[in-house]
Image (cartoon, rainbow, N blue to C red):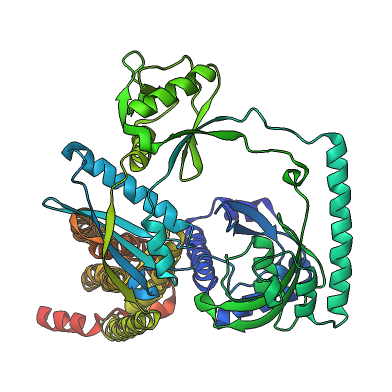
Amino acid sequence: MSTNSWKKIFTPGPYGRLRWAIIGIAVLFIFALFIDVTGINNPVSRGFTNVAKAIPIVRDIPVWPQIQLNPIDNSKSLVFKSAKDLDFTKYGFPFTEGLDLKGGAHLTYDADVTNIPQADRASALNGVRDVIERRVNTLGVSEPLVQTNQQGNTWRVLVDLAGITDVNTAIKMIGETPTLEFKEQNTNVATMTPELTAKMNADNAAIKLQAEDVLKKALAGEDFGALAKQYSQDPGSKDNGGLYQGVKKGQFVAQLDEVIFNKLKPGEIDTELVQSDFGYHIVKLEKINGTGTAETVDMRHILLLTKKPADYGIVSNEWSDTQLTGKQLTKASVELNPSTGVPEISLEFNSDGANLFADITKRNVGKPVAIFLDGQIISSPRVDEAILSGKAVINGNFTLTDAKLLAQRLNAGALPVPIKLISQTTVGASLGSESVNKSLAAGIFGLILVIIFMLAYYRLPGLLAIMALGVYVALNLMFFKLIPVTLTLAGIAGFILSIGMAVDANVLIFERLKEELRAGRESSSAVDEGFRRAWSSVRDSNISSLITCVILYWFGSSLVKGFAFTLALGILLSMFSAVTITRQLLKLFSHWKVAKSEWLYGVGKKKAVVKAENK
């Protein structure tokens, strides 16, 4: 390739830059469409799956990133998979649906704050909200909505659990009192000796051989249920022939999820052992129930437990109980160190707690004392000296926000606010699906009317605006997934309204464009001048709409906030769509001979009238 050719690529002229802009818009549109259609069971995502698995070079290379969630501790890890192991109906970013779309439960609790000082009530309720969110997350609810509400002297906690199936378990878990514990280092911690490690490895090798022998029997056609009753060490399914019914994705460890949801077909037994932290699993998929987010499976498995250090008498727990809990803590508050100005957390205990804390600090000078909330460690400060006053300070590299959050969590355990369930509303998934279908039908009908109007009145610019509108919709849906935005009926209404507002910006621009054409400007220069003159009107109208969205989001309820956020996002993207995408398309087409006709811009007849009057 000649030097001039390379120069044209990297330093193109005006028309070359226009081509690069169109290529960039096309790439962005394709990327947004890929994000939109993957993660959902539809013909396009199924087509992606089939095509990716059919390409020899791509299908065996581990280049596809995927986030795996550990259902035990909700930790996330990044893994790379090859295309043959992927199902694009499940790989990708799902839409996050709210309670009114996905179905679930709305719970209202009355909080008893009569024994809490007025100044501490808001902080205590915020701590309770934080605890409830963490408790609900263990149920697999990805986006619980927990809010506090005050009306006069009445404090309430509102909980929305989208997609929850076991409401009674959720109610029981939410009603539990937060557990605050102080623990010291365990002096009896022992480590595995080389001899014990060798023995454990040998025992586990023997267990693997036994598991492989059981797998051979299962693959040879022996009754899987009978083998499970004979060999399985899973107490939850052994007596039932290893059967689990109605299993949802994420209910088991990631290794089992991968096999039963992505690898096996009904009736198949995995030909390989599945190893997890528990041991070796032999897995059979019995049946698939439902599709999409409602998909569950019936499966059987045989578990042979592997040996752990605890099986050889090794105590691995780093912390031991001290009997000092949140029952003895009276208050946790944020203070600033007078010397450094760094935030610290001040603790105050009652008399029993002060005596316990004094004993603990006496025997742990120079050592850390850990603070646990709901079984999870949140801080482990080092004891500098024995503390006899019943007061302590947790110091560290805290920001003011971190210090406030930690104090809220401590107060949630130290000042358990009794909450009483006063209202429970269950929304069926079928009702949410019906609402979605009606909203989509309304949106599609409105979109068709907009398309007809733009084509009939603005012709070529209207066609290009429709193309830009397609890119706008794809980008909007992509951001809904990536942020993610919890979709509610109000949010969908905001999205549909933003589509109309996206066209509104084009209307202002096209009218200015027609004025420039009537004035005798050539089409390409008329496009630039029309956009320049319309920009101030487009900018001001959208800024005023954004200000309204901010006010609605700041002062509105959760439903109003969903509407305001989706509308604001739509307004920002509509400005990009109208000012950037439509402009580039118009500039590209204005250079074509076929686009020189003023009739295509809807000004031909009006120009003739002007000429007749001039005569």
